[in-house]
Image 1 (spheres, rainbow, N blue to C red):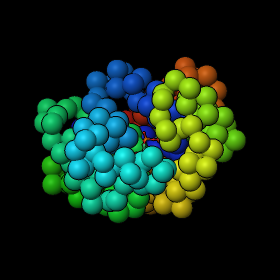
Image 2 (image 1 turned 135 degrees about the horizontal axis):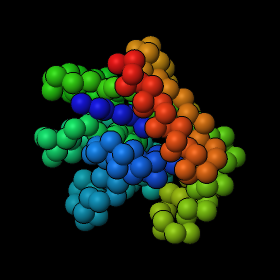
Image 3 (image 1 turned 90 degrees about the vertical axis):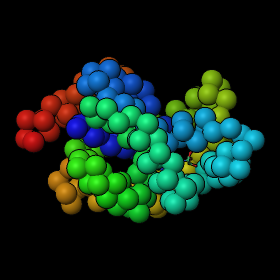
Image 4 (image 1 turned 180 degrees about the vertical axis):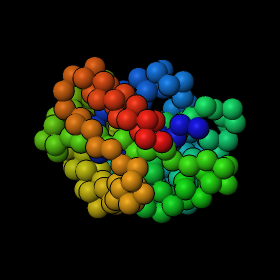
Length: 193
Ligand code: ADP
């Protein structure tokens, strides 16, 4: 299986690039952010997830891991998966490793999109007008998401670097340029695999 963790701060372009990778390699795209937003807003779980995401806080690991595993199980015949927005903590990364190893597979590589904070703030404010997402509209919430990323999520890259699975990609440029860089990185990994 080709299991790609697409990593990067909020606004880095993970959703857009996931669609390109999905098409090129015939993968399933799983975005935990999308899964949370698709929950029934009246359900207990939906309300709980929203109470965190609206503030720009991370949903607790236990809930997120359970939801992710359930989502992966929906695609038993997948050739591979793009994990977008997961893992976001080292606990989640460890859980993903054991979950995949129980299925006799593993994370192939982490592709990490590198974008400056100024550029992220600009992109998220622009996205707010068409996404309608509460967490994109308020500069304080955006800052909280960036702060959570730096404190809790950035260390996850180290977890994969230690396994020699990390590839950093310049996330500034046109969408097509960044797609080409990602494809090159995937090919390089496949050759060395
Ligand atoms: P972003 O554009 O900030 O990367 P996402 O759509 O990936 O946004 O996620 C939106 C929100 O959903 C996050 O701010 C967080 O509250 C919640 N969320 C998504 N993935 C995770 C995760 N792996 N762990 C905890 N919370 C998550």
